[in-house]
Image (cartoon, rainbow, N blue to C red; front, side, top):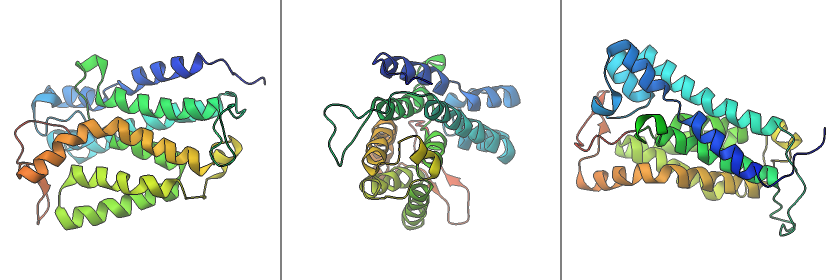
Amino acid sequence: MAAIDHWIWIIICPIIAYFIGSIPFSYIIAKWRTGEDLRKTGLGNVGGLNVMVKSGFNWGLLAGGLDFYKGLATIIAVLAIPFDNTPLACAGKYWEITKHNLIYIFVAMAVILGHNYPIFLKFQGGRGIAVTVSFLVLTNPLLLLIFIFSMVVFLALTRYVRPSQFLAIFIGTPIAFFLRFSPPWMVLTHMSNPFITGLFVIGISLAIFPKYLMAFIGMFKGTEYQIGKKGGIIIKDTNKEST
């Protein structure tokens, strides 16, 4: 099969991915189960955690799972389509990059932006963690384990959920540039270069950072919610930012 090499796909694919990311599974489930708008109740979050709070663990797990597979299906499609894997003219020996690589990175960012700022909900969405995890599962499972370990450490030390999530991704970003392990499906699709993995993690970090900025401010002000010592979520913030 001939490679798809026109530059227009670097624009078209992320646009399609944004609309896929905008599908608000959590909102739909909560509205169906309780009739409530997740943007105006609980944690103010259009995500699986808020569905868990308002509708129960199983429904929250379903919502998070659908968000996870939303990201996974989109990125698998990008891997499966034979986009051009010829290195760009500006590519070097240690930072080889192709159009396929760029589409992969931009599509991942677009799905997260769609999830966090869905056009169907007036751009009020979640924080993209389930989607991000789906990308890491496919791109580099070892990097995902590093992310989970870092998040657990930060969470144990601070009990702050949202800052711990972002700090874990922040820690994983420089590691990604040196992590030479890649699953076979990434090698076969010419996506195994650590440089590409590093750019990929930077891309998803930039996509989710705006949603975490207020969480960091709230942490220092003492208004950010935490995990309680005996379990459960202690909600302190009043700005209804999502998780």
